Length: 347
Image (cartoon, rainbow, N blue to C red; front, side, top):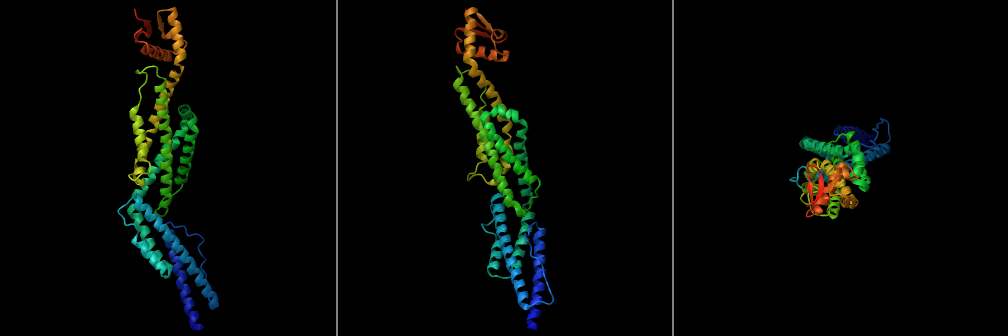
């Protein structure tokens, strides 16, 4: 028993030192050691109690090593999918650590290799991770800035404003969470999840705008009395927005990193879309009221040979558009003077 006690005391002291050094190294690379065991040593202690303590500490260390190994797998998967597709499907370091854990050797042998791997990955991919973080925050800032123009959004989007407002709110939540968070190599899985969520939000924002563009285009075309130059259809913007949505959609062609790099460009179409939708709304409103204006013009023509902008009970700008529409609809019977803004019967 005296010899056994000497061996147990020596092993417990070695184990305590190794556990303390190991957890310190994990904390230095940013790993959150949850509920670390309190290191204990008593000179006069029963062998059974000492064995129980050693078993508990070894079991806790093994569970932590398994968790670190799982985290390493997640980090490696993100690095491989986002930054370096040329990497092998499974990391040799992770395979080695799994083997050591399976052999039930002391867990810090396996974990030591993982700590070295984390440091190596941080050194090699920190610039790419930082770039992803910058793109994320820049894109979220652009989306959340839309909230400052809520009046414009409501006017432009109508019933779809609530959907847009929800997406802006989601972007704000992610932005707030990341502004107070330091991204390290250990939490890139969280970064990846946030990148995916942000790309989804951006896609929804662009889809709302694209669908509104298309709906307004179709409405204007259906209301036009004749094909004329009443409006300038922004075909290029519609096509560019559709392409942007495609480039930030999950497909075999687009990796997450590629979508994230393109995201600021995709979101640059938000402001032009809003401006164009606002212009389309004006044209659409004019066309909806054109039947009333047409009746007013025809009533005036029954009384006089010429109709001017001032003769009509509308704003001068709207009245001018109505006279042009009426002329284009019946240009064989009338002439329209662009300078004096007079609609006259042909003689």
